[in-house]
Image 1 (cartoon, rainbow, N blue to C red):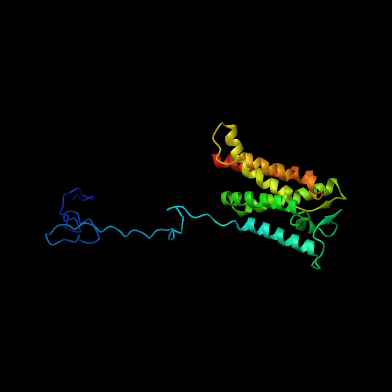
Image 2: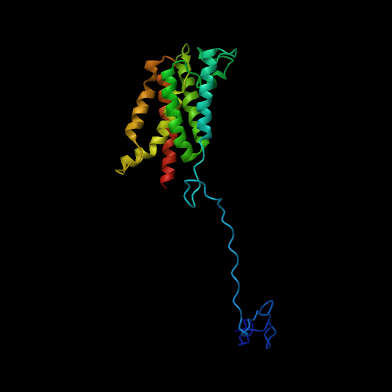
Length: 243
């Protein structure tokens, strides 16, 4: 080997250069039985960071998380429907006219339903598209869209129609649906192939949007707020994902 200090050629079995005294290595190399320099042992491979695979899990890819936020929203709606229809001695959950000091009724009204068909169609849309969005972006986006489309839609309708009876989350359902459909709509506009069933999505959207014809507690204004919120939030997310 060559000494880096004086450039002299020295034996590979020594630790210091005999010409300049430069320190070549910390310790002499180990020799095998044939007096040859033994190769360095490779460092032990670190253990894998991922845990053991679960059933139907692809190696190297985490399994899907459960839609806890979406499930909580649907469960809260079912409980509110039971409480509202059975009158279990709790304060009124819905807004009639102006909420006044009972501002919290704006939040409880989106979970209550008086019409079974209205509840079924709306909660179906919330469950399906909330679950899909939660898989894609996490629970915070689902809760944000639900509050803006649902509570915001009720508040906007109260401001324009002070004497209306408000309940249900048709605005929240449309907000979730539109936010989920934005990436497929952008792909379709660019001429690409869309994996999702946009015809089925459009059918659900029409069914939710027409709920004011079936139940007067559902409002057209809440529909509009939900659609605007869904596209306003879903479009920037889709554009960022394409970069």
